[in-house]
Image (cartoon, rainbow over all chains, first blue to last red; front, side):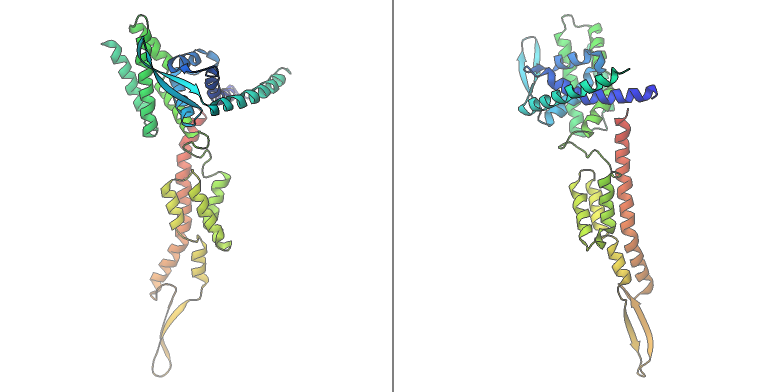
Length: 113
Length: 212
């Protein structure tokens, strides 16, 4: 398979997984939006810029997987916080399980050479 | 002040890049990014030109953001904006086939086709109206019109001789009748093609974005 094929496959993989990475960061409680995108943008392996995460957050909001709330901030303008809904928790849980199986299977195959 | 200029310039480029998006999403995204830029700057201990450039670099290229937004908009799960597969998917082809030929299945097939047409999110309202109105019954209608017995008016003179006979399916004007029948055959086929190509073009743009 030529390098181009690998690139496409990887970027589709990343795209599929990214939303669950977002949900995972909110697993333990609400998160400040700007910090959320900064954390994800900083992970090189995810290869995503901060701006590209905002459309994803919007979609998760539309799907009812996250909610947002504005809070006053001492150090500046009001901040937007994201939190998981029960549906979001369920989606994350489902994915977690699937991902574990998937990762194990692929690791096994990759390790064969 | 240089700060504002760089941000506003970036946001202008972003607005241009996200034009293909639905208006509500477009506005929401630009507002969120604007918020992000100014909030990030306000939280810097030493806001200055260097920080501004860092912030902009981390936010990323407007074109990439627009592409991500387009893909996200179009591949939302059930409840999302658009059906994932276009007209050349199995159910797309089935819908169009039923519209054309379903009438021959006791007429019910066409009704099923219409139901599919209106219930699936892959078709726009224009395409739905086209498929329903041109022609009700699909190809069954011109078929019936062709095979049904022609009705004729005859003029008989006093001697019992037929001096004139005009036959037709819709009118007794021969050429008009031919035009009507031809139109009835052509319309459903034309409509099906129109619908298919319109939808294909719409999905063509989408699939280009999704494989990048």
